[in-house]
Image (cartoon, rainbow, N blue to C red; front, side, top):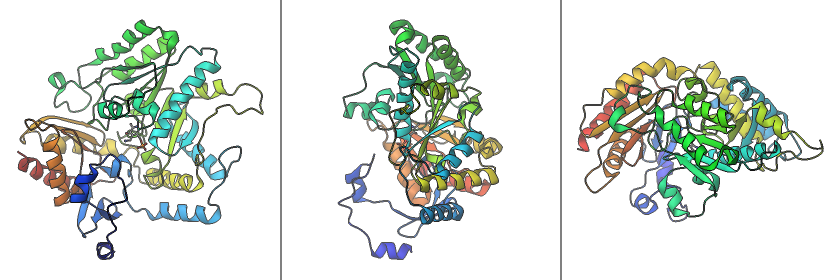
Length: 442
Ligand code: PMP
């Protein structure tokens, strides 16, 4: 198969790749042709260990026949049905199955096609919720610096990635940001949740004091910020955000597009931290990355507040042609079966000790300024090369790829989030390739 791919290389001119240095890529393309279990195979036939579960999504590992068969079966029975004003059982079945694992009370499920769409859906739900309750003045949204919430206009507005915002200068009005929770000086090399920084939650009090609670609809945060380098909240921080939101009637949204479905060793980060938000956004692990799909988990309170007005009226003017798509729902149910049968939603907890000590064991290698781990995620922060921020980490990324390991880099931070099926031998392989690459990047 890989030989065939090599012989039939397509032109690289037409596909405009997302979030990619396209010109650099074309000069030295990196292509995967196949994937099974913990490994990709490149188009030139090399095995590459997946240290990132694709893009934080292939939580159960690659190539599950049961998912492929479920999708095929569903497409044979019925390929598509309209999602507005018509239903089909498999979407209801998937929502029911998701409700079984949802944090308490968050069992009203709205389907989308991606994380970005889940975020925009959640923000719109929050605005509609307050309006339905006669508090239409609550229109302001709050995000956090270094937050990533996808690429919709809502998501880039509440997000805190400078380049995403700078490139598109039009944002939603009325958005504030908390400071991020990254504090290298006080928290470097924390084994899990850092000790210091809970006081940053008080930023929310400051924003409320500035604008008035009656103007604020919702706060959205990633419980653990993933894409900007695995920033783990300090002890007590998320609890404090919940308290302040409760005090002022502000909805709390957890963006769990990365942390959902077992990444931290619990089904959701809400379970890990013991903090229940009003709305959770998900995607990625929802279908093991096999078919694009997202889901928003809303509390009954949020849902019920919108079930008003005449019964023949649409309650929420929002939705997607492919919401609850039959093939995606089939993939999702088959994925949940694997998570359940293989115990994957809690496997990160069983492996956390080994993961933590293996990754923290890299700390004496050159140029490492911080290592952060939680559940089955890690961030390794490197010292920037003088005058070339991000260059050292990029070199490590390319070197690892050439030697058979896929990692992800953002600036000078390496992010690791392997499929949850990873065993000790994979972990040894990951650590060995990565430590060699880190030594060479001196
Ligand atoms: N929110 C978070 C926390 C994410 O990590 C991502 C994707 N990395 C998104 C939203 C956007 O998801 P998508 O790329 O599926 O639109």
